[in-house]
Image (cartoon, rainbow, N blue to C red; front, side, top):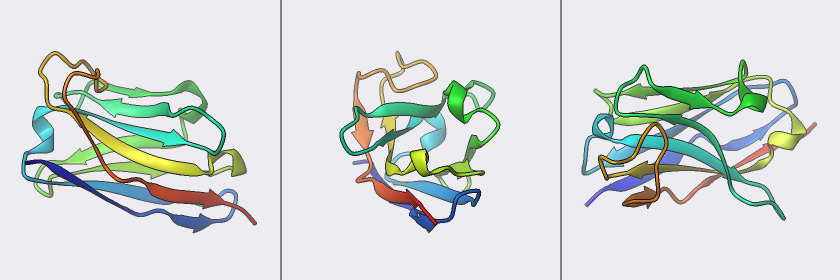
Length: 125
């Protein structure tokens, strides 16, 4: 049974950085497509960044390119989202998700997903 445990959220000033973690207990994350998502109040959930089964296959949504980066530590069984130069519009609840189905590409594809509980990121002065 896979469980995703998230950490790293919090309050940061504009221009600051945070690193979110998504740790797996149960199954190794380096076998599956994993993604980071966020949802701000009143908005739909959006995908931010994903990594396929190979670490070379990654996706970062255009507005986050150059500021956000996804990485995976197989030894720690953890996936990270490094967020730099944070802006107030980055304020949201951030979620990680993994798709246990091999049909998933770079991002979880809705086949057999598991989700973390989310962490709040607030960017404010």
